[in-house]
Image (cartoon, rainbow, N blue to C red):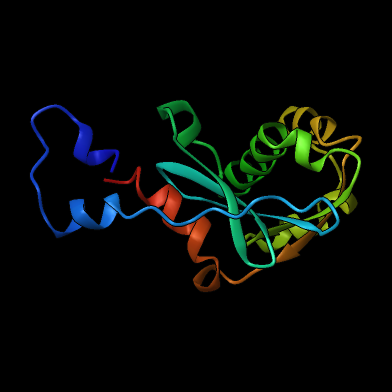
Amino acid sequence: MTALLKKHSFQWSTAAQTAQIAPVLALPDFTKTFVVEVDASGGGIGAVLMQDSHPLAYMSKALSPKHQAMSTYEKEFMTVVLAAEKWRPYLLGRHFVIKTDHYSLKYLMEQKITTTFQSKWLSKLMGYDYEVSYKKGKENVVANGLFRMHAA
């Protein structure tokens, strides 16, 4: 949809029709566990807040050239932090699960902090009660699809 809104680029097509079909979002149930699925690539990031495999909210963002130059690990880590900040009212004070296709993030709390970047972003996650779980990229279709919108 983002690519279709660029100046002089809109043409009604099957892709435009598909982009108009919005998924139905569920309402949050604060007695259930929240799940944040994240993904990042060269040109964008995406995340979805879910419960019981139903989306509650979406987030996607095109990356600036500065952020595009970051490593995949840094982009995925940044996506986790941005999603946690965006959905703070839902996540703070309760346990939630972060699902990522970047395996090393599963060990986020056990890794040695070696860069200013890691220190800055890790400090932003302090106070949250979360666990990071690995989800294969091909299974991470919702978050993956969100960032791919910005690749066009």
